[in-house]
Image (cartoon, rainbow, N blue to C red; front, top):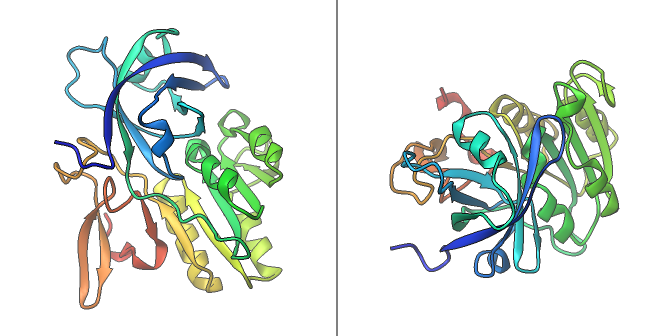
Amino acid sequence: MLPPTMVEESVRIISNERATDLYFRLVVQSPRIAPLVQPGQFAHLRILPLREALLRRPFSIFRVEGYTFSILYKAVGKGTELLSRMRPDDELNAIGPLGHGFTVPPAGGEMPLLVAGGYGMAAMYLLAQRSPQRGIVFVGGRRRVDILCEDEFRALGWDVRATTEDGSHGEKGLVTQPLIAELKRGTAGRKLFACGPTPMLKAVSRIAEEFNVPAELSMDEHMCCGVGVCLTCVIPISTGDGWEYQRTCTEGPVFDSRLIAWEATA
């Protein structure tokens, strides 16, 4: 049985279109899950035509509009490749909203600085949309095609600063470079929020510690069950006298960066 904050429902595809050369945007009708979603939470989808697959796929919830929610995904394997070929009115089975999400800054609170790598941007949109104050989005990727959703964030009134490792879009280099430059201008009343590859999150955690700025990180771990049963997505979290494992699917995926025991990670 699912906890009361989680819902399982059949969701109907409204649209499933290519967003860039590599990424797709899926919108589903979800009258039960969509109204419950908080920033940083995710949905666990079962792709019904993939009958031999026992496990669902976790996806960050990108946008919520009325009784619909959307995800961004990349066709990288059999499941997502099949998902990319599904059409409007096809159905998926979804469990959600799952996980512990971001803390929305209160009115008059810290200025949010969002840091995203690739489709880490998907986990950030609702946070940006629901934040009472606008801030800066730092988005990075290897190439231009890895930079997503700039227009959507700018439409919300956010300052978007892009970096690519090959210099094909925005500033050349790593996403942490313009972040450090911004923090050197002043850190009072700032808070970091990040989602992306683990090396990027570790770097953001180190930067937050260096500049004494609070940070929340959405940890990128492989998940199987998504509801806290299988224990495959655990990460080490500091305790008073050491560390303990916590589940990214339930206690996370968002954690206070100061609590992550990076020295105990693989």
